[in-house]
Each structure stands twice: as structure tokens, then as C-alpha cells.
Amino acid sequence: MSDVIQKEITLHKKPEEPSTQVSNESRVAFSESGETVSKLPAWANWFIDLGLNFPSGSGRRRSILLMSTPCDSAAAGLVALGVVLRDLAREEANDERGYADAVRAYAAHSLRCMRCNSRCNPDLVGCGYVTEVTGVIYGQPPPGKTNRRRLLVESLDGELLTLVAPPGGSSVRHRRDAGCRDKLGPGCGGDAGFKQYQPEDWAALATPDNKPPISEAAFSLLRPRWKPYEINLKRSYSSACLVGRRAGDRATRKFLETTGFILNKQYFPLSSMLTISGWGGEDSVSRLRYFSTRGKAEFDRAGPAPEIAVVDGAAELTEILGERDRFERTQLIAVVPRDSQADKLEALAFALGELDRHYSVEPYLGPVTPPPAGVSAIWRIPCS
Image (cartoon, rainbow, N blue to C red; front, side, top):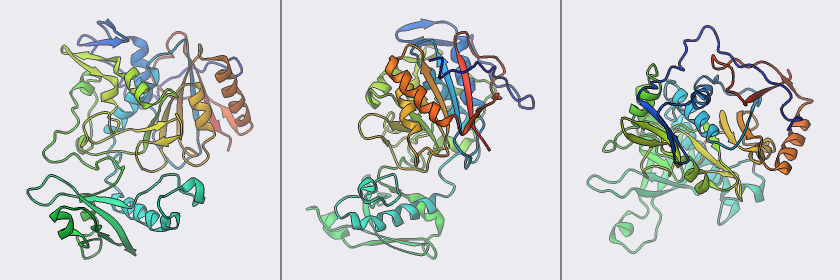
């Protein structure tokens, strides 16, 4: 591991930014793997603050913040929680901006993929895309109904998108609706009309009117000075990501369920606070995408290339470093336990060595305190 961790860099906070790392420790207990302590540990606080204060910004070349920890822990999940807190407070951090253009891009992608015949297969066709599409877009249910309407992309003429109800189905409703068309765009409600439609495998853009927004109570107790941008509590966001463990998403979720916070005698598991799609209610908005490194590496839902990704583990980081398309411009925060298997650490050391010709090690402006005891950090920034 000495080849990977080249030197410790003391992390400190930008002086012009107000500190946000004060926690309401008198009211917050911390639970990990069945063991509970009455006060939020300093190391857990530090990892949350790291994500909370991590600089935002996209379009830059990929940078890598690599942290070495003494043993396996929920540190990556805590960093991801900090990122969720950070983005909930950022006005621009939601999928509503540019949503109509994103749906049009999805439609164009699905129409282009007709050459794949029965199923979109970017790897086989080499079309340059990284996400499979089905061409299915769901519309809001008719008045008084609960089931969403299943529509297919029919055409895209400039900014005008046409969706059609497919034939098939034995019910009277299916036979009646077959061939009905919805038009979105100029002269048909404009871009605002797109908000009522959701491509398949996308997280809900907004929380339905009859569902509560993300609860800010637990977040506020963790960080009393923290204030969300109100609309983000009911909007999804797709530019932040958690790269899960090789054991799979179920194992990752189960592990994060054993870590959480006890606030006013109520337990809040870390897994639910991350708001990953499918880890909460079906209609819940999601503020964090999940990338599986088990089997066929893929995201849990469609979206743009992530602006930031938190990577949990040595083998997982090695895999992400090899992702040329999906993470090329993503800012990576990786947590690597030093007690990982030797072959995984050696593979990571080799992968990082391949990058060192193009990266430099520089100090990172982060939380106000230095890393906890036993934690070291390396910040790799692309050479200009």
C-alpha cells in the first residue's frame, strides 16, 4: 500500500467559507454494526464534512482524492451523505433544469437505436452511448386514475416530441388508447409539459403532490447550520453517484443499513438517508445514483455522466479508473481500507501508477480539521 499512499496531506478548509462542521452532538447518537455510542464520533463527523465541503463543478478533467483507512467501515457512505447534504443546499443541483432537453436526448437515442432491433445494446453496436434505452416514456395517469400511461417514442421533429400509446393488451383501456398520441414541445405546452413525463428507468423528477418531500429533520439535526434549497427536497438529482461494493447492491445496502443515527430516539439508517432510487419508496425522488461494480457494471438509472462519485473500496476504484466514458470527467473520492486483500491493493497500485505521468499530488482545501488518526489522503490532480 506504500506505493499507493505516497504521502499524507493535511486537509484544511477554505478560509473564506463559513464552517459547517458543528454537529448537534448532544442529540445525535451513532450506531455501527449493532454498537451504539451516545455521541457522533469525530471520525464520522470528518467524513461527512469532507463530502459536505467538497468543491462542486463539472467539465473539468477527472481528479482523484484517495483516502486510506485502517479497516473496513461505512466511511464512503458517510462521505456520500455529505455530498447529498451539499447538493440539497445548491440551487442548481436538481434535474429540473434542462429536463426537457434531457428527455429529447433520450428520445433521439431511442430512435437512433432502432438499428439494434429488439434491444438497445451500446456495447455491441458501438454507438458511443453508455446507457441502454427502451424508448418507453410514462405519462401521468388520467384524472381519477392511478396507473401511469405507457407511451413509446414515435418521432422527434426538431424540439417537437411525439409519443404514441402502443397496441397490445387485452383490457378495454389498452384497446381504446392504442394509437393515441401525446405531443410535447412548441405549441404543445412548451418545455414545461415535459415535467409530466418520465422515461423508463429514470428516477421520478419530482415527488408526487400526494407524497411528502424528503424529510430535512435528520439532516438538520446532524448539521444545525445547514439549510436546503427548498425545491430540492422534492426534486431528483443525477450528477452525484455512489460506486458500490463488488458484493453487489443488496449487500452494500444491507451494510449501510447497519450504520445510522439515532435522533430523538428514532433510528435513521444511512442507506435511507442517501435517497438512492429503489432504496426508499417507488415514487421517491433520488438525490444519488448508484453504480454497481458487480457483474455488468451499470448505473441504477439513466442520467448524465456524474460530476462527483464516491468509491467504496480498492477493487472498485481500480474498475472506475478503467472507465473511459462514464467517469472521464468525474471528481472521484475513494475510500480504501488498508486491510483489503493484497491482490486488490496491488492492482490498484498498478492502475494509479499508470496515471502518475499525467497527475500531480497537490494539497487539497477541505474540512477545517486534519484527517482522523489512522487516515491518510492523497489528492491527484491532472497536470495542465
